[in-house]
Image (cartoon, rainbow, N blue to C red; front, side, top):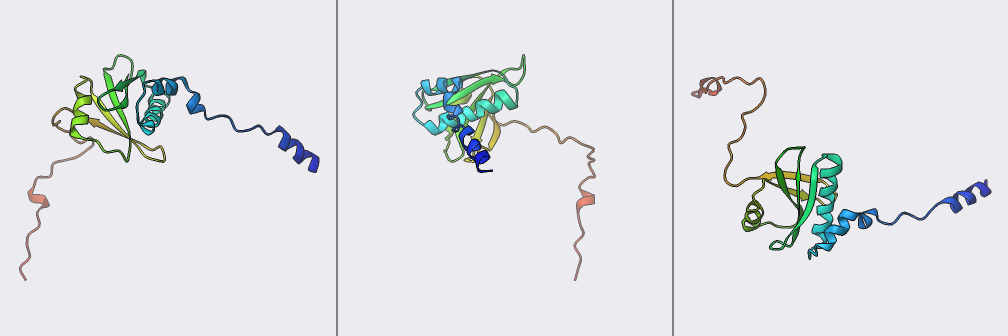
Length: 154
């Protein structure tokens, strides 16, 4: 039995190098020379989510020199309009001016907050106020009177 365990120890290989650092897209993001390495890391996580999980098309990386961030541009599906995604670590603050600079690029914008556990939360940002879509489902307007309760006199 000890021979088998020795063979198992010998056959174990060292852990592979960090594949993220070797990925061509990560290397490209690093070559954009963004000062915040945490932002580059979350941009790569968002890139992988968009391309591998959500199957976005034509996703590319561009640097925003004003904000010193990596932005992602891509299409949700073939023929859809290009959207800009701003990936940010969840702890990093964001100003109105920063949002305006991304919106001024002319594409619809998604903000993607990335938590320390790699949870991704997307928020669509718009230029101005947008009327929400009506609720979907079998809802009926019961009128205001049916919701009112009469005050009881004590």
